[in-house]
Amino acid sequence: MNRIVALIVALIVLLLVGSSTLYTVDQRKYAVIVAGGQVVQVVDTPGLHLKAPPPFQSVVLLDRRVQSVDNPDGDRFATSDNKVVLADVLVKWRIADPRAFMSAFGTDLSVGPEKVATQVREGLNAVVAQHTLGDLIADQRDATLDAARAKAAATLGPQGVELVDVRFERLDLLAEESGDVYRKMSASVQARAQQIRAEGLAQAETIRTEAEDQRTAILADGQAQAQTIKGKGDDEAGTLYADAYGRDPKFYAFYRSLEAYRASFANPRDVIVVDPSSAFFRFMRDPAAALGAAGDAAPSVVTTRAKH
Image (cartoon, rainbow, N blue to C red; front, side, top):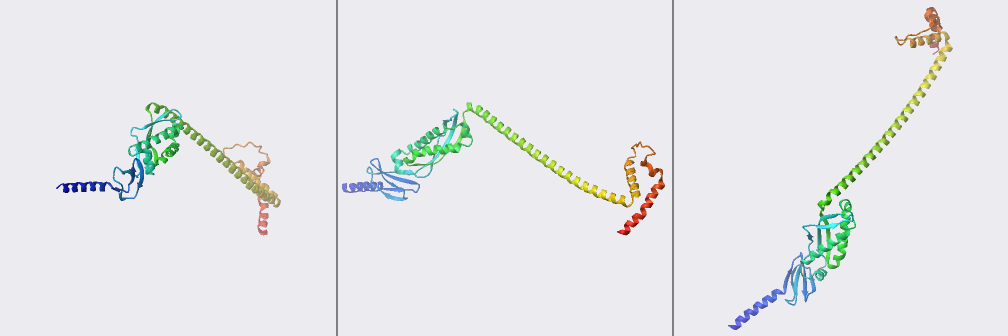
């Protein structure tokens, strides 16, 4: 009977010892084998593996996925212009070197995330202190985060941690400083708006001046062309008049008088004060002379047509 009990106890002990030598590695985990407080092996191949039973060896499983850490209450950072901002900083990181991570943080898995957050916070403190609030609000936010990430990564890299991302989830001012900052921002926006309006007015004036110059040049060119055409017309008319005068001086004098009458009496409201004995009315006083001039011109006209 005692043998049976001893055999059963021995069998149970053997099963317990055997089961303690086996462990399973998930594809999302690292298995770190520790002996005497030192890392002796890192296993990253999924499946069933064998190790020495406790207390000779123990296994610590580390998450190899990207992990996130943040502070729900936010962190305060002081800028170079003595403004205090309240920021929610999100840090994404992962274990890149399990052996270095275990050497730096030990087997307490809660220490790692806290140390990562602390290193990033210290890096942000140092970098934000070199920038103004305007830099953080405007176009320097990404550069600030990149600098903080680089500073923290230089410390965490040798400890087996890879920083994947550092970002501001929220960036606010303290209530007592918001009013002053908003007033400065409003003044800056108004100054920029005035500058844009002034530039627009200057451009409009330039366009108007150029258009006026073009208009003046076009009008001058048109007037010059008109004068040229008029001059040619006057020359041709003068040639025609001279030719007509040379062919029949009497008829030419009669025709020019008719044109003068037409121009003088074009407006029935005009009053002309002229001596009745003036040569201007010679054809009116002596219609026979007018008919004679026209009659004398008839043969000339007929002759001219016959020549053509």
